[in-house]
Length: 453
Image (tube, rainbow, N blue to C red; front, side, top):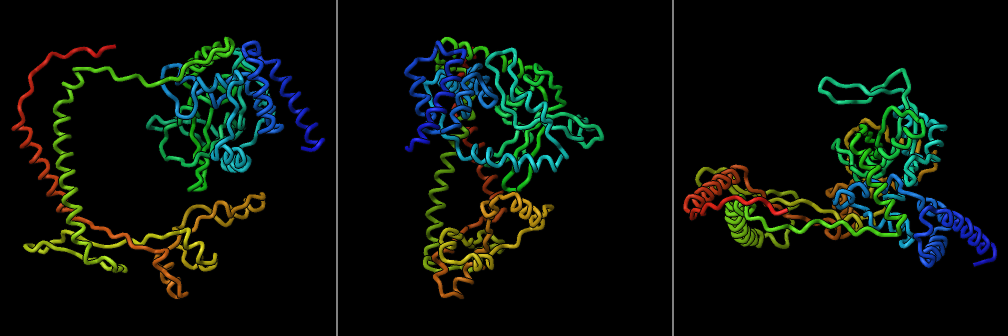
C-alpha cells in the first residue's frame, strides 16, 4: 500500500469512526467489535464503508420486511432479525452484495429512464432529497428512496372493482421502488418484503410532509426486456406492524441483546389429525404402491423397446405402434435434438452461429431502437444477447464443415402414450381404488380431541 492510499484509508477510517461514535447504541457496542468492524469494512469496501456505517443508525426499508415477519414468529426468506441486530451492534460485517443486487444497483439509471419514458415521469428533486434525509418520529426508521416522481396518471376503479393507473392531464406524486430480480412472474402478487419497504417509505413521507398519491413497484423483466409495474396500495395494518416490529427490535439494539433465530415450531402429535386423514393416507399408499410397481414394469418394457434402436439416430423419424384389434395408435417413439450450446460456441464462429439462429416471433418491441438507445447510453448490449439456435441447422452446418455434429447435437428419445390409453388407465386406477376401499377393514370411531396448544 502506498503512502497516498494509506492516507485515504486513514481518512475514511476517521470519518467512519465519527459516525460510529455518534450511534445511539454506541454504549451497547463492544469496543473490540467496533474496531474489528471498522478495520475490515474499510479494507473491503473503501469509501463505501461510510454508507455501511450510516446504515448502523437504524433499520432501512430492505430490512423491515424480515423484522415484521420475525416479530410474528414467521421465518423470512432472505434476512432475520437475529442477523440484522447483530449487524447494528457491529458483530457482523456486511456481506458482499449478491449478483442480483449488484445488477439492480448498476442498472437502476437505465431502469429509471425506461420508467420515465413509459409514464412521462420526472423526478421531484425536492421531495426526493427530503425523503433521503428524513428522520421520522421513530428514531430507528431510515429510508433510501429509489425515486419520487411526478407523472400524468391517476388511479381509477374498473367495473370489476380493480384499481388501475391511467393517463391523466393532472400530475400525481408517486413513491417508486425499482427492482431487477432474476425472474419476474406475471402474477399480481407483490412480494411482502417489497411491499413492506414501500410502506416504510410512505410512513416517512407522511411524517416529512411529502403528500404522495401512491406507491409503485417497478420490476425489470430481463426475459421480456420490459417493465412490470404494480400498484402497491396502502395497508393500515402493515403500517402499524412496521412500527411495532421496528420498536421491538430497536430495543434489542439499544440493550445490546441479539434476538434468537425464529424457527418453525415442532409438530405436536395430534390424534384428530391422524383420524381425519386416515382414509386419504390409505388411498395415497395404494396409489403410490401401484404407481411404483407400474413405473418399474414400464421402465423394463421401455428398455426392451429401445434396445434395437441403440446406436442409431432417428433423424426426425417417428415409430408408431398400433393396437392389433382396431389399429388405433397406442405408442409413438420419436427423438428431440438436444444442443450442447457451450460446445457449439467453441466449435463455430459467431457468423456461423448466426446462420443457425431460429427466427424469432414478431413482438411489439422495436429491438433495433432499444439496442441503439442502450449503445448510445454506453451500455454493453452483448451482455443481454441471447442466441436461439436451431438444432437441425447446427447439425447440417457442422456436417457441411466436416465437423462431428453428434458431438454437440444428441437425440433424446421420447415415448408418447396415446391419450386414449391414458384415459383407460385413469378409469382402471379409479376402479382399483374403489375396490380396495370397499374391502378395507373398517376403522374404529374415536372421539375427536382438540389440538394441543
